[in-house]
Image 1 (tube, protein in one colour):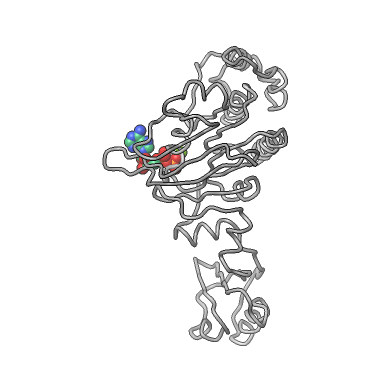
Image 2: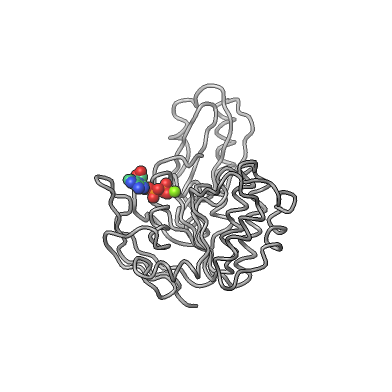
Length: 307
Ligand SMILES: Nc1ncnc2c1ncn2[C@@H]1O[C@H](COP(=O)(O)OP(=O)(O)O)[C@@H](O)[C@H]1O
Ligand SMILES: [Mg+2]
């Protein structure tokens, strides 16, 4: 597989703020590559450097064998871009926007088809200002896909969308990939990244703190399963010590989470239930949870990933 994007030592500073702090990564042709991280992590800055919309202070970038800082114009003819902050004139109608954008590209796809695919048919005559957040988002994604690009950048793919619209967008991104295209996206939804991306770079404070497939990132956590239950009050003293092997208990309000390392002799859940019974603790809603990307994120950044 060919490398379609190469980034070596990318750094971008705004005054006192180090937005991107010397990151390196490659994107292979045909993959869905995700960048995740909290607000301010440097995702948009990175993607805009790749698109040639911002100039890096340091580092080397190749996108489709071009240098975005120098060949930005030529590059933007070959890539699709959904910007985090996009806007259109209030009174521009959906079909007018599609028609206008289509005229920018030599080989754009028939926009009528894209409009239908993105469920915008009914809104074709609606002015931009009258669209809901989700409809606007879908229109921007349609505009990004219009040039039939080899490579698509989607910044904050589904921010502001309801769950249903989010699923439509996921399917669409998978379809784009199935047609052999490469997708680079940013999101701050861990579930979205986990389900959609082939590989994920986790960014924090302008640095890549991990980069791998979702499955490998989760495996590297070394956490088997976690036992979760609800409790009124606190666990009795001595409970944590009574657990065998390495384990870790977190309590937030009434929710208790117990993690344990891989390779235990007794399954964590049976031991926890036994101990709870032995200590006569009244618990509710006990269940096990498999670790997910959210846990990886928490572990790496020490922060909860919330909207
Ligand atoms: N044009 C700008 N001028 C000054 N600071 C900026 C600018 N754009 C972004 N930043 C700062 O750079 C950091 C990274 O921002 P950004 O790349 O937008 O992160 P993300 O997309 O991950 O939320 C943040 O601290 C942000 O405030
Ligand atoms: Mg951003």
